[in-house]
Image (cartoon, rainbow, N blue to C red; front, side):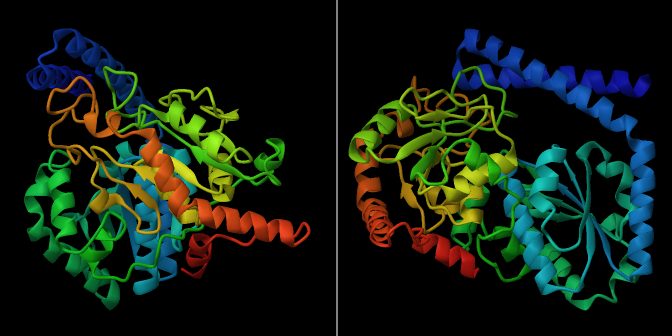
Length: 440
C-alpha cells in the first residue's frame, strides 16, 4: 500500500507540473484544463496497465527462467530489450536488431514494451526473438539476462546488470556493445533529457550523416541492411475489400494515440486531407482512395473506403503493402510502408525531414517554419510560436502536394497501368521502389 500511495503522489505531482508547463507555453487557461483532463485520463490508463502488468510477475518469472535456461544450454547471450515509442519506432528498432544479429554471434532476446500486439508483430521475424513482456516488468527482470538494453531514439546499455564474464566470449557482440557505450558520450545530455531534447538529437544525427533509419546502427558501428523488413500481413483482407484487382492508394491523417492532446488533431497532421483527396480523384479517377489509421484520424469524406479503427496491424500492413502509394504525415505507417516496399508521399511539418525522410519517398517539406519537434513539451498539441494553427502544415496548399505527386509518381503509375493493360491481364510489374526493397 505504501508503494501504491507513493506512486499515486508521483502521478499527481506529474500532472501539476504538466499543467503549469502547458499554461506557460500556451497562455490559454481553457486549453490547459482540457489538456490536463486528457492527460489525467492517460495517467489513469497508465496506472491500470501497470497494475495488470504487476499481476503477471509470477507467470512471467517462470517464462523468463525458461528462456534463460534455453540460452545457457545453447551457449547463447540472453538479452532484455526495452523499447519505447510508437509502432514506427518498433519497426526501426526491429531493423536494428535484425542487422545486429547479422553482424555478431547468435543471441536470444526478449522484448519489453508498452504493447504486446505491436511488439510481437514487429519483432517476431527478427532472428533470436523469443517473447514479449510489459515494459513495467523490465526493471524487475533485467538482472536475469546476460545484458539489458533500452532502445528508443538511441541505445542505452545497462552495464551494472550485465554478465560481463560470460559475454566476453562473444567478441563481435562485445565490440558492438563497446561502440554503443563509447558513442554515448557524444549524446549524453540528449539521453538525460529524453524526449525533450530529441529535436537536437535529430539535428546532431543529420550532421553525423545519419538519420532515424540508421542512427542506432551508427551507435553500434554496424551496417544498415535497408528498409525492407519481414512483417506478417493478412492478405485475405484485400479480398474482403475487393482490392486485389483494383489500383488504389492509402492515406492517413492521424497520430499516436498515446499523446494526450487538447485538440482534435495534432500539429503534425495535415489539415487539408479532404481537399487533397478530392483533387487526387479528379486527377486520377481510376484510382481508389483507402483511408487507414486509428481513432485519432479525422474521416475524409471523399475516400472510397474508410477503415479508421477497423483494422489490426496485419490487415493494415497488407493494404499498405499492396497500395500504389501511401500519403501521410510523418508517422508509423510511413515506416511500415518502407518495410513493405511501398512508396509514400510524406507531408512534413514539425518533424525533421532531414532526419525522418526516406530518400525514395516523395518528401514534402514545409514552405513556412517547421522542424519544431520537441522544441517544447507541447509541440504536438499547439504551435510553439503560438500561431492559432501549425502554419507549417495549414499553409501547405493541397494543389502543391498534388503537383508533386503527379510529377514524381504519376508517370510511373501510368507506365505500370499501360504495361498491365498491354500484357492482356498479366499483373503489373512492381514499382522501382518495391524492387529495391526486395533486393535489401
